[in-house]
Structures are given as C-alpha cells and as structure tokens.
Image (cartoon, rainbow, N blue to C red; front, side):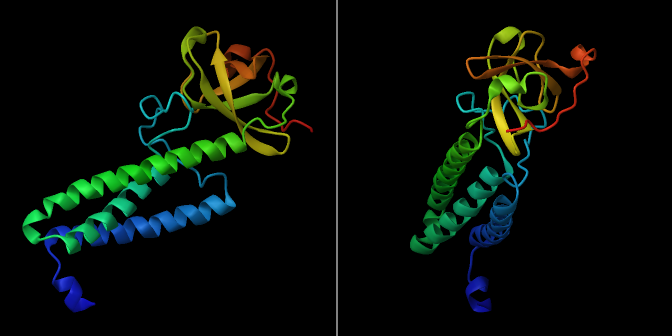
Length: 205
C-alpha cells in the first residue's frame, strides 16, 4: 500500500484523499438519511435564491449533492489516471468533472423523488389553514411564482407548494397558512398575522 501510494503523482494523491474524505462523509450522510428527514440538508448560499431548481422546488446545492460530486468525481479521476499515460492526465480532470456532475444530478433527482413521496400525500389541506410553517424555498412576491414551505402535519414532516399575496418571503421565514388554492398554500408572514397567534401544532388525522 505504501509503495503504491508513493508511486502516485500529485494529481493522483489529490484524487485519492478527496475520494476518501468525500466517501466517508457520503456514508455518514446515508446513515443520517436512514434515521432523519434527509439528514438535515443545508442550503450553501444561506438564502436559497440561487440554488433552487424552480421546476421541482428542491435545492440543488445540498450537502449530499456536493459530497456525491467529489466522491464519484475523485474516484473516476483516479481510475482514469491509472489507465492513461502520465502526459495525458489532464483527461482525468475532464472525466472527473463529468462523472462528478452525473452523480450530482442523480442525487438531486433522487431528493426530488423522495420529497415528493413524503409531501402532501393524503393530507386534508383545508385543515392546514391557520397553521404555521417555515419557508424552505423562497416564495416570490404577489403570487408571481411558487416556493416551498415545510411543517409537521398528520404526524409527519411534509413539504408543500406555497405562494403569497404580500412581499417576497425568504428561506426560514415563519409563515401562516391563510388559504389553499389548487393544492397550493397561500401564506403570509407571521408578523402580519399577530392578531391570530395560532401555534404550529400537528394536524390531527
């Protein structure tokens, strides 16, 4: 093992250590996924505006997708280095980027599927009116587009489409559901509804 490692080029050593670190972290994420709601993904930009797939509502740059990019990309790059001549190792960078991007896309699509599976389901949406939730994907102002909210309802954590009649709502804003339209929640910032301070309690089935 030591002899094999000492024979690696600097680029191959970078691939090796990136692959090890990313793979270990990816395994941790998978274990967390089994016991929590998606292992607590975090928006890397802190605001949720530039990292959103507007068709699915699922954040693109999550811990899992970025980790998958480095894990798969690093091992693909290392394997490519082992199969080509040293003067062509730049090819491995291209292979690493392509393989990592493919893994990145697969993870995003998988998260989209999982979120849809546990979203509104058989919820009685009319019973959610008056309940509080948290913005997960930014909601454009004056019904100019849809975002996402998350909340506990009927004993499970759910994600729902949402729009607002007021100003733009940012990620992590506390909101209250004021109406439902075509399976979409109409929400308002909690501070705008202080006259009706209903707590965010799970909806009874």
